[in-house]
Image (cartoon, rainbow, N blue to C red; front, top):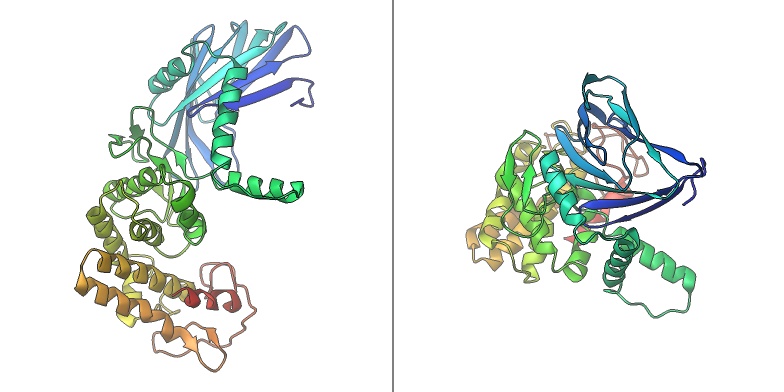
Length: 412
């Protein structure tokens, strides 16, 4: 890829390392590492950059935003020595190291030949990032070799589903979409299973190869994760064990996990249908009893409108916003728990959660044919507009209208 400044940029990747090649138009070139760079409401809370030697840079960035206490450590190795460097930004400088929320470093290189850079990541420390970098450099692989290995892995991934078509445009759309199903969740643990939590605990993942993060369950429980039971049967047990690890670390299954921080974004407790789907399809590799314990804990959590949902048999709008969406989704999640209870021979729980799963019926308005919100006195909220799409925490439906959400009960 030729950048606007005429630098040719080539990028490829292994599991925990990025491989870069920069071909500069002149005899001297610069790279900048910026720990203060931000997108949206994310912001740096601390950063560090240190030139370990003429070929090696390490650093970290701590941030807050959607995820609190997020930490990323890196180690970078250059194929040519650094000729000059200087730190800029909000920094406290000590020799070859600078610390600060906005710390940056500019590095000068001789660029008569391409500059190769490897950047390895860790969630634990710069030492772990250096160890990963040394592993990635074993055998002195070229960027071409790494690129071919990555291409081979992606080809294997995309060949899991084969379509028979002569329509190139359709095939491109299909495989581009299949590629995007692999964007999340992402690996969070280091190669040895070590990982760090948002509250600075350094722990070890022992229930699989990789611990994952970025579980945006509201987005994926309907379609993506059921697809994973077909396309990701090898990785799915690690994903579920990662959810169970979050249960052990945080006390509940993830609603929306980002680097062990529970963002609690969107509605439902949708780790439940994801895990239930795998169990009911017979996927092994995780503790079914532990999974059921975690699912049941989510169903009795003391937040997110759950106590009032249990008390009234639906969630009243005057007790919590998004009451229709939450009632419908909790009812579906409870139905999923009932099916797992049946699978495990827990008859009393099966009956309990089947009864809770009928909560959606209390919001059905036979006069309009829509699912509608009620107050705690059991009366429908007026006025009612089935085409109204509300935004904000006080709405009756989340990211949709009565038309869209009323179809959800047909899943039950």
